[in-house]
Amino acid sequence: MGLRGLLLAALGLSLCSVAAAAPPKPSHVDLLCDAVYLPARSGWARTVRITFDDRRVQAVAIDGLLVYSFNVQGTTVLTALDNERIQIDTAELTWRSDFRGQATSQGRCERQLP
Image (tube, rainbow, N blue to C red; front, side, top):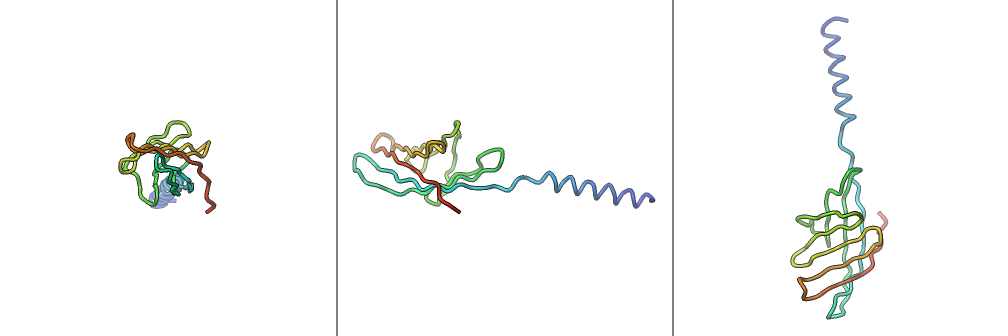
C-alpha cells in the first residue's frame, strides 16, 4: 500500500467518524390542550408541538406558530405568545396561561398520536 493507499484509508476513516458524529434526528410531541379562559368562561382548544432531540428541547410551536423564546424548568415549558404567558407541564399534562392579569386559563392536555 503506497502513500496514495494510506491517504485514501485515512480519508475513509475520517468520513466514517463524521457520519458517526452526525447530530441526532429531532423528534416531536404533539399535545391538544383544552384551556378554559376566565372571566369569560370560554373554552379554546390549543395545539402544542414540542420538538426535541436526545439532549434538549429545540422548538415550541403553539397553534402552529413557533414561539420566539422558551424556557424549560424540569417538566414545565414556559413561553409567551402575543401577550399570553404560557406554562405547559409535560408530566402532569396541564396548561396554564395569563394575559397580563386581564384573563387566565387552565386546562388539561392530551398527547396526540402521530
